Length: 546
Image 1 (tube, rainbow, N blue to C red):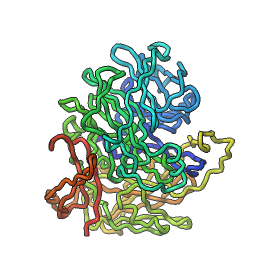
Image 2 (cartoon, helix red, strand yellow):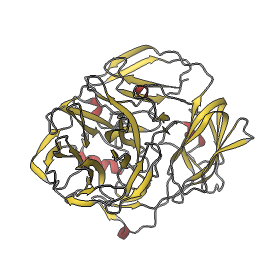
Image 3 (cartoon, helix red, strand yellow):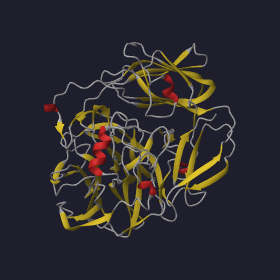
Image 4 (tube, rainbow, N blue to C red):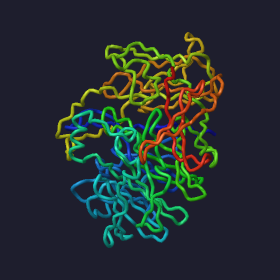
């Protein structure tokens, strides 16, 4: 039986209202995810969610609130320790708590210790029962590690510096879009640069043990950049010393519909296959407007940790075998790139064409007066479609009527997380001729809030036209769609192989690639690694050929 997902994961992401000099507005956020397999159930803990999601198969997720845990502490780390689950998260200026539950689905967490202030923590228990804590999130200081008493989860001995930023040698660690730092776009950007400078932030610790080696994972250069990625060092003991893996970053997603793949966790599923979950970026309404992604990963015969992120925002069958899941070829191709889209109305700068431009950071938005907003797509000819992903955007949501007394004060400004579920609903129809329509999804009677809904058809289905209507979105907003994405098989010929590829060195740590356009290609998936058959990083992007 197929188990299909499509990044970003289709979760009921929580809203929050942030009021600060760095930006005021309403947006969704879930980031810094940890997934752990515990007693046959997958537990997913992301930031700013007021609880966690759980699943039996990594495809269908249910939510459980955890009011006993600190909802405003960032970057939750969840690990199996002493037969139960530990939880800890980030809090500046006061000691951070470490919590424990024998079974989070049935028993609440209780605080075990609060050793000291830390940021971006990770707890790891080795095979010998010894426990370690890692933390760090800074542009100036290293990531630290220390051993904890197994019973009290309090520090033993002195902390040890583990890794630091190294942008001079690791080009991918450099700050900026495509690792190029441009001028600040907002007053918030200027304030951040004045306070932190332009060095990369080294953060997001996570330790994985594989065949006696310790893989120390970290994120950089910054969550608001498309090049936010995860790198790895390898050591022979939990506190190092660690050596830089030659092939880095091991998880990166600089191109595609949704970009970035930083600050995550690595785990094995019920069949022993490896996965990596991490943060994906929107960062339009707020720098911290983020989502969760899930990607297959593996250790090769040389012990190199790598992620398959070729076409990483295309539908993915979770049941593919260990070898096939690492293939760079997707099950179905994108059919909606630059398809003709029309709408009942559109705001200036948010025209209908943005629903097919393959960027989650641009979108169509209906006029506020349009009470029956609709969006229609023409694929250009009849195609065989299998999956449709409907991605809603949060378009200039009205400010919430929340007083500062109801908000939590932070270092800069105030924050309020809205834990109540909102409602997102629509009718999706398909047609061969644009006149006779078949409904493939109508969730108006469901109390669900899925902003990245994936509709799977039982079989490949002939279709030319798609239509969204009767849309209901949260927070008093207007219908806005960043991507009506259609996947399946067309009738065209496979594009010719790219020719005349040339490498263009640009300094000591930069290189460019150039090639002749391939006839019939809408875009390219650039992959590179240590050998042609070992692909450790991919960059997917669409092109506008003249």
